[in-house]
Length: 330
Image (cartoon, rainbow, N blue to C red; front, top):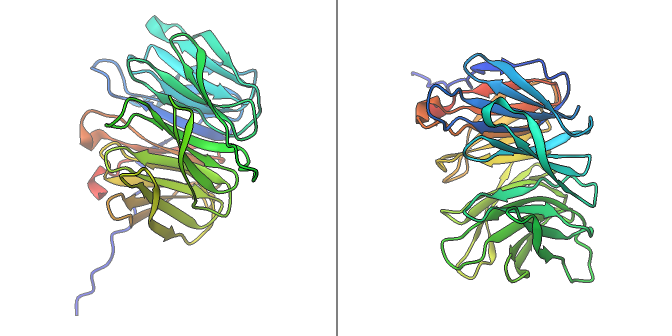
């Protein structure tokens, strides 16, 4: 009898060290013509943003704009000449990176300390979803004029708690962007931005929703919490939430979830120091990546033009960033 052994999980392609602080967030910028190098941006608990050249595997630049306060969200605009960062100093900084400059040109103040990362809809009219002034409130800012165009506040008597994570997206139907928000009470809600209106809401978790992502093409999303359940859900034609699958994990605690751009795989960042890979279509477990020695805070997929060059990055409390080539593993 011949026993077929499962393939062992891959080792990291390489890692990045030298942050000297917990790595809270990651963002790739690789979809650029040569000779411009592919970059990875990382935000840390020390308030610094490292700009990593993935060809040399070294930090080209270190940005300091949040007064030493933790950075927990970063995003580059497509031309890579502007960077946005969100910190615990209650500021969203807009950086000018054109022609080697590294300066904060504008900042958007926030009114409350919270853990909720912003979400950018980068269209012809760029919109930014931010945590609002009240506990459960979320707001949307028009970046061209930097004015709040919409505030969405729950009106029920039962408190939802703080907004914990969100995803702003533009559906193929209708003119209004939609905003999905995960709350402290474990619920996920869908809001119509232009109408300031709650469309639907569902209690997917018994703990605060720590992270979520959404696939606009299939109208399916995923969310994680302090539980050992990864919840995958969908929106029906009436835009009501439906449970698609509840995937049980060995250990509790999901800090981050990301769907790869090609909608083939899903990655999760675990409190148990592991990164888990799933097939997105059926949410089938594919691999458990073990490298880090502390909680994995964040995961991110690269936007390389050539699929075989695409990477997965994971940032951890252990102050390291691991990079994995898993295209051939899917």
